[in-house]
Image 1 (spheres, one colour):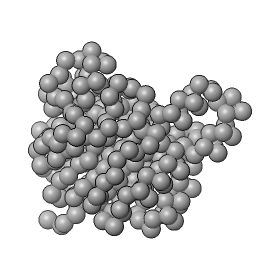
Image 2 (cartoon, one colour):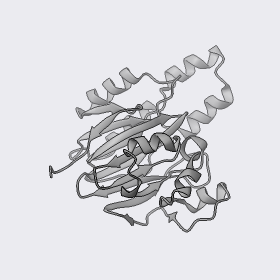
Image 3 (cartoon, helix red, strand yellow):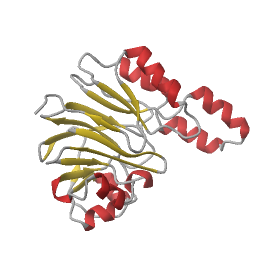
Length: 242
């Protein structure tokens, strides 16, 4: 089973965890034509699409998923924020079974109605944490094999760019709604990484990040295989060869 990144920035976010028989889609922020390609046009294997919150770069193409009868899940607050009626509700702290995927939503901190992250379990990959668009991670997790965690900006870069004309309102919003490099490091340090096999840094700012330095810093801190999420990235997640 592998992770495929279709998009991981403010232009659009979407990730697929899949093998030849089953797929779970995270986020609906990419054109569905690109999702189809990522699935090799096999919609029938999709267990579900799960969405963290209502902002466009995560939600814009949800109607394409709904129109193709793909089970699509989000928090109650997210559906209500977009005036969409749905019975497919994700609730923080309540596990849901989607095919062979078990998904436990958890609360995160972002400037929207009811944002969530995901603790995902599958027999072939073990445990995966997906935490995006949150200025810190309020939870602690055990036995995590794979981390997909936001590393949006570094404050010194953000501060340097502000005098150059970077919108101060946008700057302040970034500080209050996205995870910095330093906070990302602190979040990982607060968790037991003994079982960790991969760390994927997601949702990097095009303007206020440094992918090379971020990756090197995480490797230096934890000694784990570390990747920058960008379109086209594929990572083998399989825990036990089949």
